[in-house]
Image 1 (tube, rainbow, N blue to C red):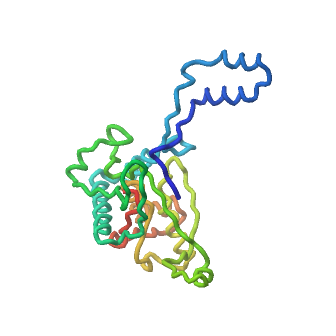
Image 2: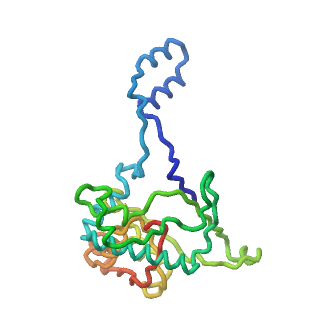
Image 3: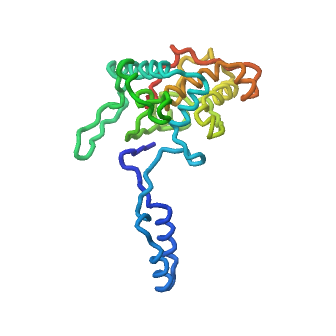
Amino acid sequence: GVELMSDVPIRHSRKMRKMMLELNKAKTLGQRLSLISKFRLNFLSPELPAVAEFSTSETMGHSADRLAAAFAVSRLDQDEYALRSHSLAKKAQDEGLLSDVVPFKVPGRETVTKDNGIRPSSLEQMAKLKPAFIKPYGTVTAANSSFLTDGASAMLIMAEEKALALGYKPKAYLRDFVYVSQDPKDQLLLGPTYATPKVLEKAGLTMNDIDAFEFHEAFSGQILANFKAMDSDWFAQNYMGRKTKVGSPPLEKFNNWGGSL
């Protein structure tokens, strides 16, 4: 997996793209001149990139802000969770537990040898930041959100028999998996709530059987909203078709950094 947010493609405007495609199809000089005569300077205005959900045109930050509001997750709750996440990541880094980071020489700059997105702060400093998406009343800020960065990761996955035959020592086993899909407008970031009970039931396990949980952490508000949804009988009955809640993971079992917060 690779993400290159420092050099994302910037597109021509839709009007400019349309004209260029039509010019490519034009067969005669007259057709080309006719198309060129319709050109206007505003066609050159670029479409700036947005990390948006294509079906709703909303960024994940907007979704996270509305999700946090829907589940009454406060700004302080989010900042405290983000501070916990950064602090645990820094502790793991200092103890040499993140040793699988491959050094990378950035052209014209320094060599990156460790995750440089780990930035423990203080609740006082975090409280000074303004809302990043829904202004002025939102609760999602730069401090309790994932940051846009460049990065890459690699994982070698194969059958156990093949790994052992090649002399590899497996680091982990993929026991089971499920796919879920939700309404991208209101439940874009509630995947963990829906997926967790399904994959546990498929594997014949319960929440108590799991020693460590990791959910994708896009925003503090998203994770905390999922915790509330998972711990709600009302949500289970009205949205998930379940009689009872699945229950949220104990926080002491939820120590992931996830590269996002």
